[in-house]
Image 1: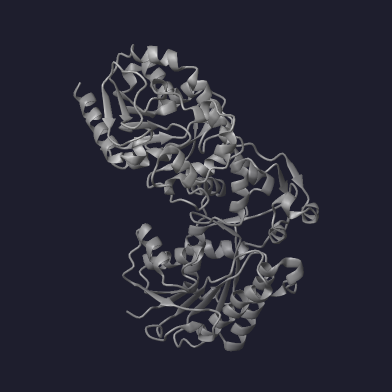
Image 2 (image 1 turned 90 degrees about the horizontal axis):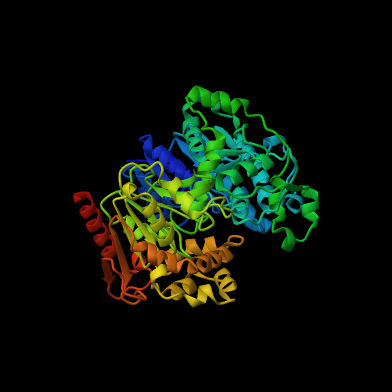
Length: 575
């Protein structure tokens, strides 16, 4: 069927979400993308959006006519321009090609639609519309200056052509997939590399949620009174920047910056020292914006913003889950939670898991994902405090933390621990034998030869700090380095590599006590080892050996490990 809506820039962060929103509303949508559109289709599929009413068309906003074929586009009523070149360090020519000339080309193409109802142009909250100061490419940088120039140019061209125009001025948009802008600050905060904030106590960097934004944009053409309107879309309740950083720091379990540096001072300091791109600093001000018209229209449309503090926390979870865009997010619930006295990264089912997985070193809870996706019941996994994504400064022992993690659990799950975590898991099982159905120790470090490169070598810390996914995979004997992008990112947090080495050295001193304790367990305990990583001495416990596996069989042989765990759970249930 012919399209009734055209989304220009549909492959971008906002454009793809808007395309999905329009499709969910039953519209016939043409998605104009610069490339093949495969990324858009894949993303829509991951969101469960039916693409039966979608047509993907190639376009180039830098060309008059947008490079579009007219076939199937005569019936377009609503044109949404979400295309923009968002980058810092561009030349003025690069920025103007899309943000000025491209925006004008969209307005001119919209004017040729015989059934045009509305052109919705996405501008920015810092533009201050037609009365904005003249763009200054030297002062503002190419991105902001081009957006400011484009805003004025689109308005002028729409007036000249009689195009019904609505301008939306969103602030920093947050939501899954937003990995630039404010995300840079969150990343440095999470890494422990943000000792001070630019700006002052009243610096206001407002945000708006992605879902709310696209619902607003999709609804605008339905209201005649919105033609000719300009709407500032931001959440007035966004905390000032120091409070925003403190909110996120508390959620992620990291220290908050205690100092601020005036923007003028930061601009004068060398970029190599501050790590701040000068163009980003122009967004830091105490300015406030008139959102009354946007609030009134949203209310008439039945739209309501989610609580901004909750939205910021959810976004922080998404950022950390994807390692700021480097890996896919888990397909199960995830996020920071309070476990005992420590903020903890938790993945999966918190209350009724059939399995609880504890990771070894230097990996994290995601190392169990291949197995968790193959077992017969929901699973719970978490990053130990001090490691992975959890708080870097734990206030409780791993034994106390594990007790707190399992406190809400109902039923008797199979507790599965790998390497280093076999110690805390065993001690928990000895203290609470009635709380778990069985204990499975995978490559138990206390029953195997010491790993000298970690426990003895003075080069261990710098070696871990410089690891790439490929080098770490080689060190661990893993053929595929892809999933190790996450643990490598974790190891680059401030002090992370040192904590890994210190923990392993500490565990080495507990080997004798654990070897004696495992013999006194009153609940079922089973061992799983790889044939290439055998036990140092025979164990008086059932041992499953996985052929051709090393120290990480859950990664190299997840099918075999999962089958064994399912069998263990069935035996435990039959007792």
